[in-house]
Length: 154
Ligand SMILES: [Zn+2]
Image (cartoon, rainbow, N blue to C red; front, top):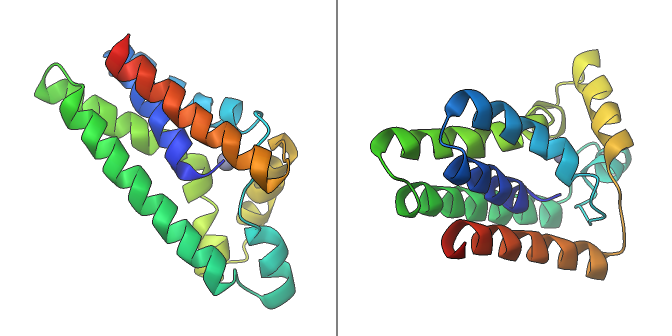
């Protein structure tokens, strides 16, 4: 999935489970769970194989997604927390929820071709359930909407 739904779910977990020893590992694990929900992703891998790096259009989308996730995560961390420590826990959970994808960034954007990155990308790819762009974006919008409902209205 894009980073925004991952961060939304990580933040939601942290708002409901303030204990960082539970919520941080759970947020990390939620990444793999969410990637099993059918979704659409920009084609970083295909483009890198074809052109040596992701296209400008894809990179622009990655930047928009990363910025949105940062803003959303910070907003939730400050609006839905019960204390300063809880704010930090929410921020840590946002971060933990995207670690699996952050580990791919050096491969795509710094040209690091170490076997570790290749194997990691292969592993993540094997879990992903892909679908068409329409349904694949719908599931992600729905994920963000559901998590926001869960955080602020339940
Ligand atoms: Zn992922």
